[in-house]
Length: 580
Ligand code: ATP
Ligand code: MG
Image (tube, rainbow, N blue to C red; front, side, top):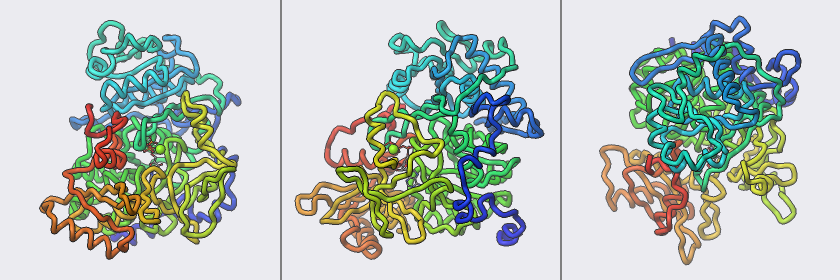
């Protein structure tokens, strides 16, 4: 069936009219989509995600579909998932874990991670995920910073990444191991779970109770621990419904690892609060396998990241056309700027664009988005969520000044007070306070807003290049370079220069079949000049086999810069190519 016809037959999106929804939106109305704990006992994330569905007609719907690395698969219905969650919450109770104490996971994408996360929330402990590919030191730092009480991991990960320094963490009282034997000072997940009852009553939970601890990606420096509360459920549900257009019963796939905030907010909480079937894929990115998965599981909504999309683009549109992806209804992307090239490509390949959206670990949920009902402006992050006021501001001595002229650059700021706003940086009260001025949360990202209210990402404040009186965002330069057929990835930095203050330098990775050469470098400079003009185009090009990235896949410009300047590389604990 042609895409246009398929689209006509579909119901209108949940957010059919952005302007109308914005005009009538209130957080109180949004809250009414949740149930709250029975008997007015408050609001609990695990209850909203699973518990309430387990006692409804959705009980037998698949909540979690796990696709193992070796081709095995396991379905957990909402009712089954809730029983496991209850068991784990009871385990925590037997272990004496108190409300507010931290329960960590260091696990790959396995069902036990999801049960631990939700069980910790149900028990009013605080859940903190650690990315399983972290090496021992980043793992230790984060366990220590958050004063972990319980860790759920595997025997192999424990031996390599935790056992060597366990004595330095007296607060870490219990380690539960999934699969295999439990050596001394650890417990077996299987036997503790089997011994516990699956009947659990969620204790009274206040919306402001501390629920989640998420470390930032560490793109610009040492990672910070952002603290989130149970009230974030309102945001997870609302953005799942209005931005990702989730409908009960949809099949949804978020490719982000649950070791990061996207994989938790949008791999667990937003989909489950919306009653969808969420796919958990244990394997790593593989273009053919990913497309097979989309086809076989009849995925309706797919949420992924630019770094993955760039990988897919390398293989062209053929593998997409060779499959029946007729169930796909909505594609979304987050984590880094989505280059216009990627939007144009997806329109060609899938017959629909990737919808970019913007948020941060600190914001706990999507704040700016391209919605299903809106025309995508390639390269734009979209417009603010109903209920959210976004602005462009400049910091002044006294506070901030709001920039109203369309197209002017400034810092992206959000009026404080949306439900999933972080409530602190763990142990860094002053740093938290510095994020706010005159009632605005200051994001540290630079952006512009056009006359129609679309926001455009310029760069992180730390990455912006000042060259001969111009302020240049690396993203616009990288996007222009990506339009050249030889370029698959580009990272752009400011290189100190005695005359211009900084000059624009680009690091590029080439598509297979292209070789680095001075001629190609000159050609790329010329190509960029035509698009960007001489003031903004790179003056220098260097070729790299691949760009350094954070473990969550973001281009690490600070590292390119440190290497360029021969400086120490700083905190590299989140580096993709670091010790793992
Ligand atoms: P750290 O704060 O430790 O340096 P980080 O900012 O990369 O790391 P995250 O909270 O995971 O940690 O990432 C949020 C940031 O990612 C945003 O502030 C922004 O710079 C970037 N980002 C996310 N989504 C988008 C998007 N759609 N377009 C452009 N940038 C985005
Ligand atoms: Mg950040």
